[in-house]
Image (cartoon, rainbow, N blue to C red; front, side, top):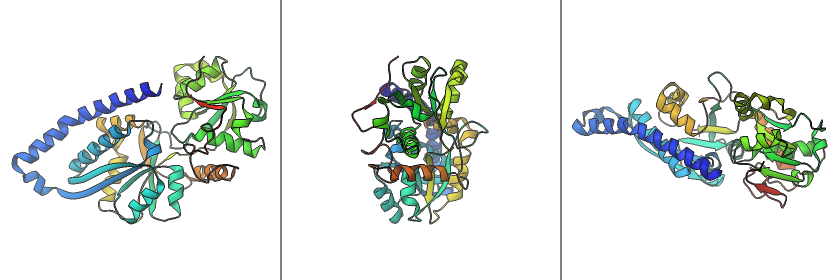
Length: 339
């Protein structure tokens, strides 16, 4: 399943880069013919850094290459010749070092990574992903059961089978369930449920529940809404609990302003307004970028703070770490639940 998803995304990336190719080549040929245009363009630097978790759903090399092509094209359209690159890094420590050495201009982070850097005052959150043409950036995770289920609260699911889907590699859905169980004093998910599986796709979470192969599932409301549009019968599934609306991705810039910062912001905010920009957004599974509003990070901050307080959890660390729920433990498996 994961391999198929990666192949699909690589095809999308390849198509997007091929579509950009003629435009870039035409610009390069024009500049190379006389050199006059190049002399008129301003030179600028644009070094991007992304946390590994933020690109875990696509091939990272392809994503970095696609972003660099977009950087360069954006620069040309805005009157710049860019010295650009995109690095994917494993640790917040490395990101912090890049900020301290002033060798990064744009950062793409998961929320726990941002929270680790927040107190350093080295970065400012500026943008996040949004869904639809008019919908906002915040969305919830929901705990679903079949309408025939006798469970009326999460306590009624003890010893049951559950599937957990998340929008990114942090397994935020699993983190939320662990926190929810903690607040109800029901222990940790790995011991509370008979089994936990983490499918690669939300459909592989929702459909087995609908057909009765499992007792419950966790999915984000964005993918649940899409699934119900394709199959209205899925609207029969019952919501047992809902998380606070949250964001899971943060695009940030150094707190010390970098040259041409407003130009970068304007270009990112207008990505959805042209076909090439929409193709890039599609690759990263979002519809548009919007400014982060006051309070947008509060629910994510609360969730990860509460998770860090659970016994055996590393504070502010995502579910990709060894302490993560639905990843570690003998009762937990990653893969598609058969049905």
